[in-house]
Length: 271
Image (cartoon, rainbow, N blue to C red; front, side):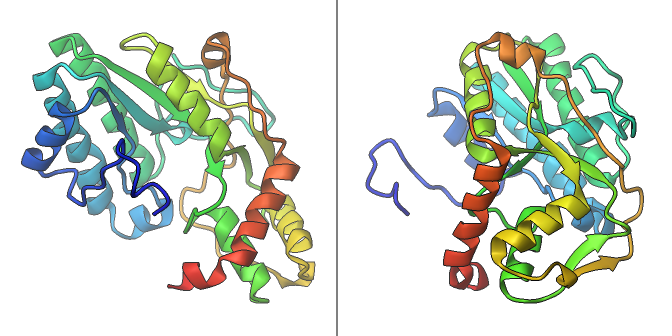
């Protein structure tokens, strides 16, 4: 809403699989950052068809529009396409084989590979970023808002299994700076990992959020683990750092600000 009066901004509500809508928007744009996706892993497990339709066919629709108009496109992918990382450490480089283990990850891997096929087959001007977990204000459904809202409302904070899975978190502003930098300066057809965040277990994350929310850690509650839950990921971000990017927001600072945002916007979230 804060951008409604900005002449550079136009909101169009439509379906990413609607070729007519996408074609018109792409043709009138100087470039496309393609972030439209069904991105909730749990929902992809319950209803995989939606993830496949939106994430694969929606990407193909956007790629085709970009190919027709010669428009540059940045594809927002995910580190989950690499599959399960080494529990003892280590990171994935961009040339690592893709081994997705959930319907969501498989759909993003298919979209990712489709981008590379368009580069080779049609000489499309496409670049891909595969990023670690983003967190920050306004996010819904993901682990940080789930834990934060539950803690702020005094409800059980649901942690899968024993909470030993490890995730790397990068503040949304750092994530976006990396994506825009790759869009501006990345090479056509090249994949760039976006990492360099803070890695911790789900149990540790839940404890931190409870403390920031002023809630007792006794609210942390174990729930049945989801099928095929990857223990950790981890990506090497050498290519994007070579472009001049570094994360700037310390995790503790960013998480505190994020929990405070949820504290001040619970009514908006309920609406």
